[in-house]
Length: 345
Figure (tube, rainbow, N blue to C red):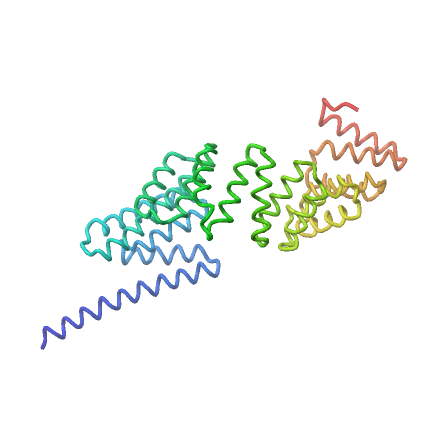
């Protein structure tokens, strides 16, 4: 009877440790969800202090450091995760456990491959992706990321080969089409790039980045009205994108739609009142419209934020000249020329 009581006590102790470990993991996940990454890292490290062979904690730490762009620590913890998964995978006789840890091992190699990709260590990244694919051949995301390694390494033919093998995968189709579009946009094959971006925008209109890239391609093709339409579709999905508003304002300027351009410049500045390029470009829009006093105010702000912008100072000089203030015009023009000794009127 006494032996049985001791045995039950040991089981209770093991159960408590497992519960404590699970509680800490759940606590760390909650901390991540609330955005407190530093606290989550500390909590995961607490898990490892009590249970040093926790695959989930080491892999999660590697993922956190990966997203923080701390690739040194990301690699450190991915290597530990791989070591732990290998230990369980090769030491266990149970088929169920081997299957589970085989997937874990594939995930860890996949993650390490992604980290190596960010470090531009393309051969190492490919080796990790191949190990992951050998362990988990049905995981199509690994195949996609293998293609992304070739894309980053500028081996576009190989990248497209892997992308094309995944075009019929419903869950990956949009990412694959986007990657194919990028592979053609990278070499300025605008027609092919447009085809794939347009395919996404038609089949999945909520994929907002496809509308942005479609607009960029149409801009490069000098099809400005269609580019405005693509960027406007993006802004219907995300009205606070500083970059897209900026691009559309430039296009409105090219089209001579001054009021629309000024409206977009104002929205960009409202989002980011330190964007000196927006002040400079709005100043140019006012200048082209003959509103020189407002142009000067924007050039003032742009030069306050970026004093070495010679063109801005020269344009302000022209504005003063056209407002019949030759003295101030001469000061700005001389200062601008000094900053750009090769500038020719």
